[in-house]
Length: 156
Figure 1: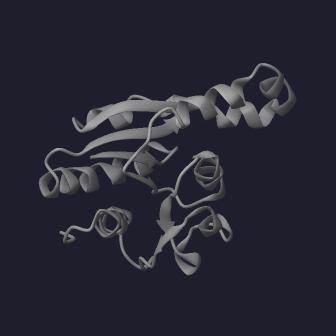
Figure 2: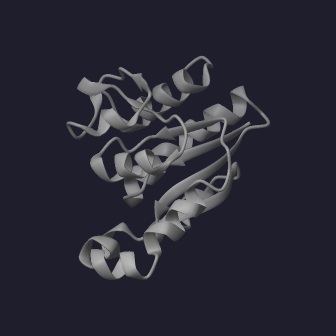
């Protein structure tokens, strides 16, 4: 099984996702992950042995120079990398507008947080499959819960 994780920033947020990947590997031993992340943090996902590929964004740079980034083909290059593989599951663990934008660019269905549970108001609209994971718990637990629900294994 091949899963794409969308979680772009920051160092702490990325590290919060690693225990959920360990849970998934225990439940589904042949699972492999690819991860979309800001280029500044591209090494962090590779700290987990189940992460095979990293797709980097430069969204901060793109935002500063939108026209130049467009002319240089940076958006289309990223889109090609993002849609190069067919994934069994794509899940946005960031649940904000930056990550939702990446989710919209993916050609297939994306899993994410439901309307009342997203960090930013309209991010949930990028997800076909939505999960109600209460915010009144630590981020590590929330990420573990959404990944276990999306992949249909018992939460730890």
